[in-house]
Amino acid sequence: MILTVDHVTTYSYDTAMGASVQSLRLFPSRFSGQREIDWHVAVEGGIRGGEFRDGAGDKVESWSVRPPVEEVVVTVRGQIETIDTAGVLRGHRELVHPMAYLRETTATWIDEGLSKLAAEAVADCTETLDCAHRLSAAVSEAISYEPGTTDAHTTAAEALAQGKGVCQDHAHALIAVARAHDMPARYVSGYLFATEDGAPHEAAHAWTEIWIEGMGWIGFDAANSCCPDDRYIRLGSGLDANEAAPIRGITQGGSEERLNVTVALEQVQQ
Picture 1: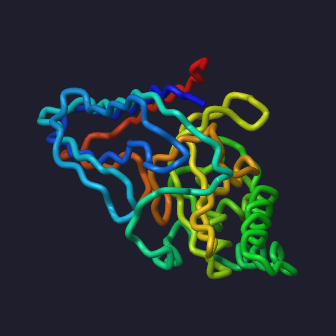
Picture 2 (picture 1 turned 135 degrees about the horizontal axis):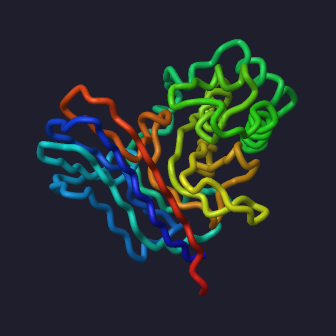
Picture 3 (picture 1 turned 90 degrees about the vertical axis):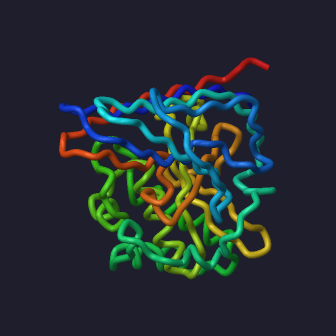
């Protein structure tokens, strides 16, 4: 499948701010499931800085905007060819050992509710891959997908307690219950073209990867009860949403910040 991406993120301020520095993880991962045809990332009026690949294999690029800053606009436009690998992350080069992803964060801290969910989901499970599928299914059932019911700071435990959330919450919850069984798990950010039945979906998306010994990293999208296929574009990963954030930055000043994001994905006829 060939997909085009048009992603614009705008930060606006009531009063002019000082200099702004952005760290962008907005570049397609290099693995056998996707091939970059054309990809451009830019910050309007910004100055491109250095770039590097981190230990997880993700490309990171820095940008700066000179003062006065009234608005920061980050644009991503590109075209990607995707291939269905049944969720398996084949051919991805990285240096971080999988065991590093057993660390907890505030967002993925496991409480009594998550511990109970993790235990019940794999009570009679003996095979690791089957356990991962069962944990994903359990999270899907326990947390219904309801946009607007959580925010960026909601933890996995809080989302489970209220029984609803968005893809970020599903990803955090699955990471937590996987780690409860000593299965390394991480948060993945990217794009989703459409749901499995073809219905349009909120294009900016997140899911989970779980390390399966002998197979490597395998993706699980608990929000949509499936494994990532050719409808998905993978960008980057981290211990949680904060670490895997496609855009991180800082702007000097005390003005209130407003955020507007538009993402559009289209399939190119082949």
